[in-house]
Length: 118
Image (cartoon, helix red, strand yellow):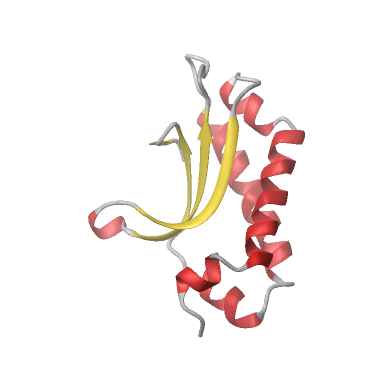
């Protein structure tokens, strides 16, 4: 099995994550969640969490300079679900050892300006 760092840095994985980021922007997921047309997103496989929660996750990091005051957690759940669905689709095209390594993660987390939203 390939190690986590090598798997997450695979050029195919990185390009697929960038394509999913583009779709989130194009389909308005970020604006619906934050209310900010200038918001952005980066998706990565990374270590995240503290203590017992620390481990490998799909980290969906959204940045917004002016998020709306009342945020709806359901919007961030929709983003997580969409990313999960798209990752399932593209992972079938990854080398088997990379797909197996990246499937063995703790889960997904959606962050807004570093704060866990979902």
